[in-house]
Amino acid sequence: MTLFEEYAQAAKGLIYVATEKDGQPGLRIMGFAMDPNRVNHWYLVSQPDAGKMADLKENDRVAIMTVMNENGARIESNRARMQASNKTWADVKDYFTNPVFHQNHPHPENEVLLELTIRSARLASYAGNEVVTFED
Image 1: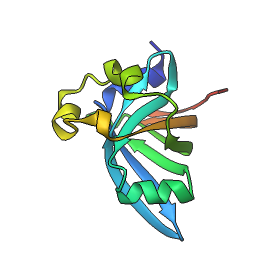
Image 2: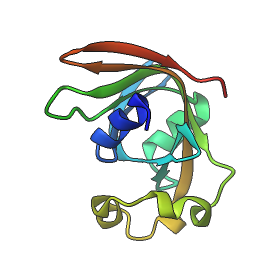
Image 3: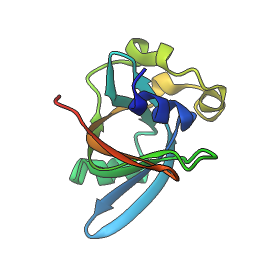
């Protein structure tokens, strides 16, 4: 397991996503699941009429930060894009193992499946920082 994957697991499936529309920033906390075959691709769901969907239609560039653990470990990136995924819920449902996600999204198959692609990220903690970059 890579350090990036360790930091992603430390977030326990929660991420802050910042969007921007017409110069107005927006920040939300969302549940995510990582693609085990492409660790810089994360999946999220949203109601189709949510404000973030309008933001993303206008600008798919987002800034993200995972929830910190007790050691301050977190993933931060402003080199990420989030858009509707070409995959279906059936393709990714097994990635979502956090029971809290399922409590908050009892019918994710009826929501829009989003795909977050992280191009580079800073792995930050109280002990130091490391930058990772992805090719795809």
